[in-house]
Image 1 (spheres, helix red, strand yellow):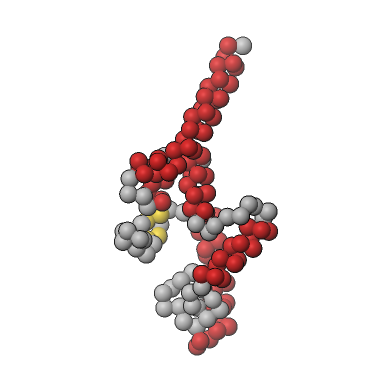
Image 2 (cartoon, rainbow, N blue to C red):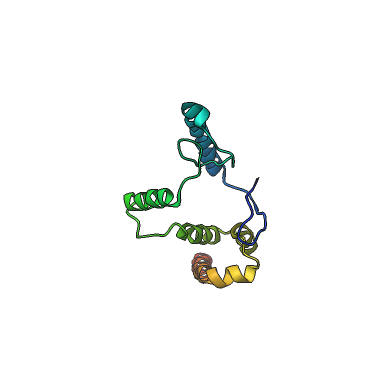
Length: 143
């Protein structure tokens, strides 16, 4: 559990992350420790950031943007914006069975109704999948 810096609505948000995400973050911190050794006294990470440049400073927007675009291209994915990752996370969460209140909390939405308004199309898909599973069950028991 980690408490993130205040968001645009000035509320702190506590999130639980998947163990594999935590493993990647620990790996990044280890790599950062190596960068710190190389930088010596020039190292300055006063905000205790996980992702920094070689001297501990914050990454500039253009660096993150260019790297993200390169990864998207390498994966052969359609053109995406960095913010689209938030939408992808929400859709994956809902489709994986997370309840709407959990998704609302993770995204920092004020209300579950807002989350449903934005991602309601996913629940429509899930209802169709539920109907399909029920049909499969009926067919199985009716012989």
